[in-house]
Image (tube, rainbow, N blue to C red):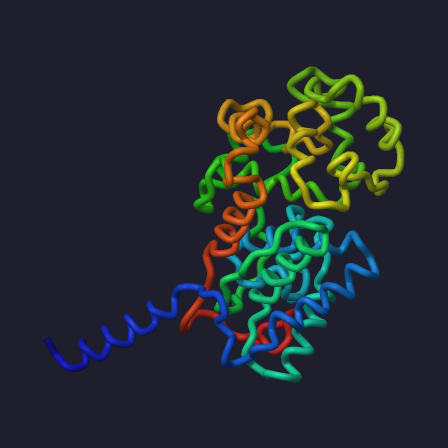
Length: 322
């Protein structure tokens, strides 16, 4: 074999060895990365408890377009990915920029914005009394930001078949769909996303989604009256909106789901089976708990389409490619 071919193979293998994320990726180059991000997230959540849900949602939306590469953070005019309809209401960019600025001051050019997003989501879950877990890092930042690439984001009005297809396209199973949807256990949504479900549901021929419990429907309509303020916020997990727990799945089973996409999880045999598995009489005797399964799914999601090794870059500021 020619020497230049051997050299190429060596470089390829070297790049491949860096192609996997790993816990403690910055242990030598920027050992304070996790403590810095944690402190910034803590301060943000103390100031506004809803930021926990905001940062968790930001991670999800980043990963579903171009992979977990921080592309949603870039500002590049009217074509910016963050302006896509599928990203409507996504926030938390200032929190990520604040953490990035502190890390640039202490270890410049080392920590990617994409990794900060993943770490911030984990810390947000912890701040909402959810489980802690180790985040594999080593992502690099993407160079592309284009709102047209977000056209296939999961939507609240998607059918269960379409939701499963969109998740499968990202390498995620129907169990991952249930568990990642359960992240709606914290945070709020706007009445804007409820209008069709409450007053013009299809294919029921208008009226309300029949999956809504009759004990819950009047409350939803009172919070989101027809022709009312579409910007009014309501909890996505009625009764437990600021605590990360399994309560959201209980609500879905009982017809108290707020979002249409959450309610659809109870219509399908596969996804309903996943939900029901957490409420069986023997579930308490198994270690494979909801929290452990959620961690597995979100870590899996955090590795969608990651750029590592020689791909991408390490941005100096998260809102702009170098």
